[in-house]
Amino acid sequence: MIGKSVGSRIEVQGPAEKIVVEKQTSRPNEEAKGSQVWVVDVVSSVRLRERGQREVKPVAPDPGMPSIQNKAGAPTNIKIPKGEKSPKKLRIQRLHSGNGPTIKTGDALVVHYTAAQWNGKVLGSSWKDKNPVALQVGTGAVMKGIDEALIGKNIGDRLAVVIPPAMASGSAQQNGKAEALVFVVDLLARL
Image (spheres, rainbow, N blue to C red):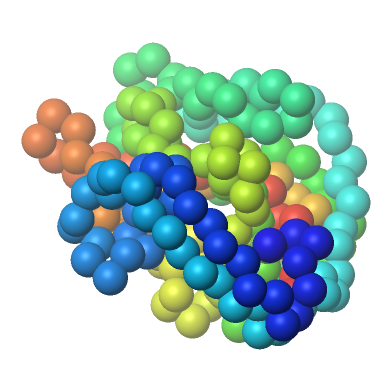
């Protein structure tokens, strides 16, 4: 929708697997197949209120935390330490420090993320899709682990977050048991 004016009507068509985002259909368990046509009315727009800059210095992972490899600024590979068991507590590491405002309960944010299973298999990435997402923290709109990890951080931060199964909704099953999820999150702006 970037570059489109309020009042515009846009037609989006193509293969369903490219258009439908998981869990955003009226039937979330239905697989996206075939072609789809969406008509979107742009009824309003929002300016990003506050952005942050970040100081980018390489950071070694804390003991027990995954290492993150980057390509062109985006996390591309999440490597779990060999033999490390799935954590039972929330773990957060600031990979880059931002200088933007501190995030508070109820803030609406724009973020980039990569989500992976504890074995390192990537589940989804807004970097890969080239489409940052908006979310609201501290209201139950996102999984508890994300709420707790983001509140109190700064716009511009990049975080590695390991979320135990008890704090993750729909956490991935590995070998028949629930395992932690790993997120790399860039806090881009506050709406």
